[in-house]
Image 1 (cartoon, rainbow, N blue to C red):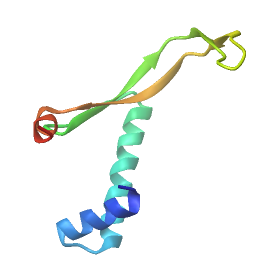
Image 2: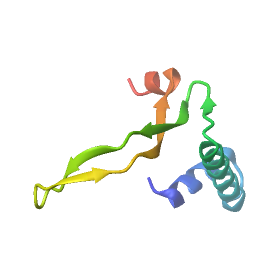
Image 3: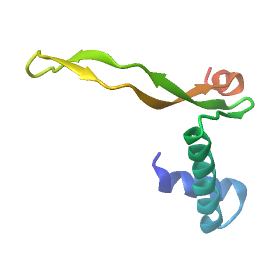
Image 4: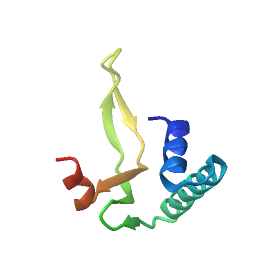
Length: 90
């Protein structure tokens, strides 16, 4: 499912116009992004939690040449599914 299909599905499920569903989806992703930029986590009980994971600097290998390269430390987004979401997939 891509973003357009997701917006269509949300609009149909909620019984609202696609423009309203699009604004809500864009707003929610923006709020989550801003929270993660501040190193906050966002928890939707039962659904899951978004957080920031800090990855340390490390040494890797260039697969083409086999030469060792340094990989810089970075932050990456992480999502942990909640119990209700996990149980719904069984």
